[in-house]
Length: 136
Image (cartoon, rainbow, N blue to C red; front, side, top):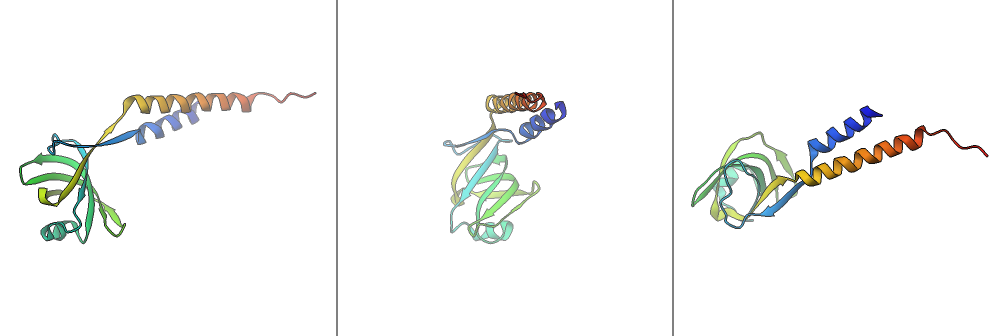
């Protein structure tokens, strides 16, 4: 039973409870995990780096200038619905191709609450299953 609780808690903590919020100042801090939505007619030079029809790129901010946002990419999604993982490749995204930037962060209170709820549920379920049946 303890193993099941630990396994469930580990899986939840690894996945965690993440939230997203739009970055309004347009200059996220280096190291920030972001999702960047690109224009449908984004810079053709960007296509040569990201591939055909990039729609959303995800990664960590390396730096941000007036004209370019430098990212270490983890995922690229396309307008046709396909996407692929990336492994930290560094790409400069022209600001003129950016529609929106969203910051991603782990919510520690939500993750702890979820882990606690699952643990309590597993313990109660284990006790209910381990209880001998009542015969009348």
